[in-house]
Length: 189
Image (cartoon, rainbow, N blue to C red; front, top):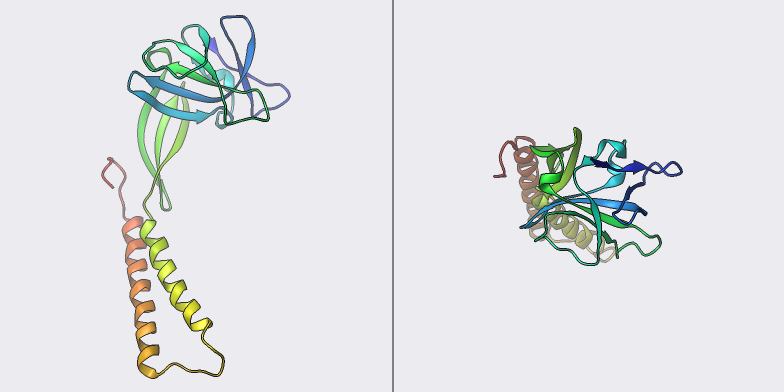
């Protein structure tokens, strides 16, 4: 059984030995199957990298390949300032399970357990309408603020702007209440 090793100098890093006997720094762990990536998580999210144990040998590969059923390292090309690799682990070679969904504020997370370690991965923002309503209110407020000095709105124009602010504020309050009452037991949000 293979496992990651914590870096003694930097607790946010871990390494793994490959089939060639060399040790490689791991940035992300990617659990995959023939359909593609199931989940991707940064090694730094685990308190103890040694807890991540998996079956099989780790090979070096140049390209992603979801048609093979082995573990492999692929150079992380998005990190140019250090030599770091992504560790691809075939789903049958590691103990992981999807636990469910959780909600924190306006964000939905997918919760997993990887080798007994709980991990939450961002899934979705359910507060898009809140940003829209807030933006509408700010646009009206900027219009009022940018109005020429010593010029005044006529009563009807001012009432229309205040009605718009009131409308978007009420919509925002309704949306916040909907989000607070949102249940995340299943994937239908």
